[in-house]
Structures are given as C-alpha cells and as structure tokens.
Image (cartoon, rainbow, N blue to C red; front, side, top):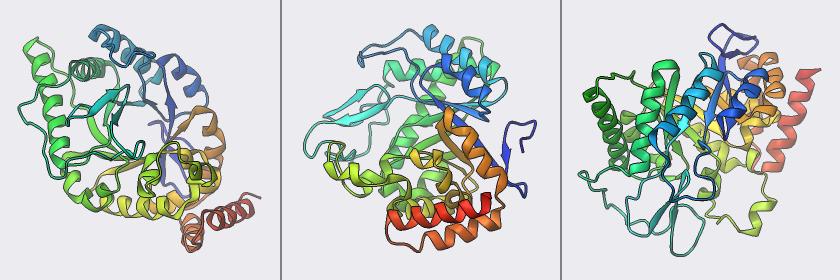
Length: 328
C-alpha cells in the first residue's frame, strides 16, 4: 500500500520509505516509474574521473533541479563531498581517502582527539554543492547527507558551513528552506557516541562500510568476498543499537547497503524500526511486495529468531525460509 505522501506501508500500516539510489538525475524518472518513494543522489555525475575538478555552482543547481522535477514531490537526499580535516586526507569524489597503512579500512591515520579548525573555510566544491542544494530546494524536498565523520566537532563544522551557505544566499536576496541534515554512519565509534552526534542531526544513514570497518577488513582483503554482508551479525547488532539510540532521540534512520535490497533481510530491519531503505531502483518492486505483505509483529518474530544465529549463513537461511512461508 502507498499513500499520497509517497511512502510504503506494511500490512498493518507501519510506514517505510523505499528510496532509489541513483548516480545521475537522468536515472530519476525510471526510478519513479519503478515505484520509488524517494531518490538518493550519491553522485551528481559532474566530476567523472577528475576528483580535483570543481564544477560551477550552476551545473550543480541544474542537476539538483532536474532530480527535483523527476521526483515530483518525493524527497531527494544528496550526499555531499568530504572535507579535508586532517593532513594526509584527500577528497576523492564523494568519499574521504587517507594515505598510510593499512589502506582501505576507512579510519586509519586519524589523529585521536584532534578537532578541526573552526575557522577553516569550506572547500570550494563543497560550498558550491551546499548552495546549489539550498537553491534547488525552493522547487523540491531536499535532504542533505554529510559523509562519515569521526568527531562531533567535524559535524558541527559541516553544520556551520551549511549555515554559511544559507547566509550567503540570504545576503543575495534568496531565503532557501531549511533542509533536513543527516550523516552517513560507517565508523564504528559512532555507534557508541550517537547520543552526542544526534544533537546536530535530523537523521542517520547506515552505510555498507560500517560492517567492513567493524571487522577491520580493507577494501582489497580476500576475506570480504566470502562474507555475506547483508546478514552478518556485526552489521545487524550495530544497526539495532544505532536505531534504538536514533529513535530515542526522535531521529529517523535509513539504511544504504546491499541488505536494503535483500527481501529476506527486510523483516530484520523492519523489526528494528528502520524508517527508510535505500537501494538500486530495480530492487524496489520485490522489496515492496515483502513490506506490504508483512505486519510489524510478524517481522519482529522473524527478526528475534534470526538474530539468535551467530553466523551470516544461519541468519540468512532462517530469514529466507521464514519469509517464504509467510509469502505463500
């Protein structure tokens, strides 16, 4: 069942937003046709293979306005670039990459306890993105997703830069609406500190790398190919902790990882109270059939038993069998 506000409901009326992950606004119309309740634009498609290239603000604005038109009132979540807070950290596209061993773990080389410079000017590319999102927000519903951050001070710096972009536009005679601001959670320490981060956020989004960073597995590690990341207990238990904290602080929570598009994993995350699943557009019809068939008590029964298994294979097998019985 879908409502006029573009959100999918479980069989007993629990709302869950099914959002299509797109890499370019030209993909937006097809995602809407497949029934997306929202759009997640992780890459504006302007940089290509040139991470050092800074497109003009009007190019960003045109991309975001195109996405808003295609969304037709549905929310559009845009992930911003990462900033250079620390020496040895380079901004590459939409993610932060660091030099030094061991590569690919996502949080190596971080100076513990060292806050960013509060007087630092925002990177030019990031400021252009923020201004363009705010300008496009006049014709659509935009949410801003900040990249994975380690310290609350970093998050406050991003909020300050967002306020700076708003102030600049106000000085130019344009008063944009205030977008919801969230953060991609991929650093395990945030699981323990989310109470502190939540003061600066409207929502959180759990990312795929949360599992790999928890297991300290670099991107090129051969063990990663043998792990079913969608059903790994390390992901599921961290997700449950994060959602409990987020909802206690009255914050929304989304998931952007392969698990979001796995029908058998859907009951597990519904049982935790997840508000939004972000996935490739082609996976939305199958996931919607599961959401609309399930009630929340049914999802909780499956989730409680599935999370008693200590291995990804055990979780997957039980969840798949239990869901198949319900879907008959």
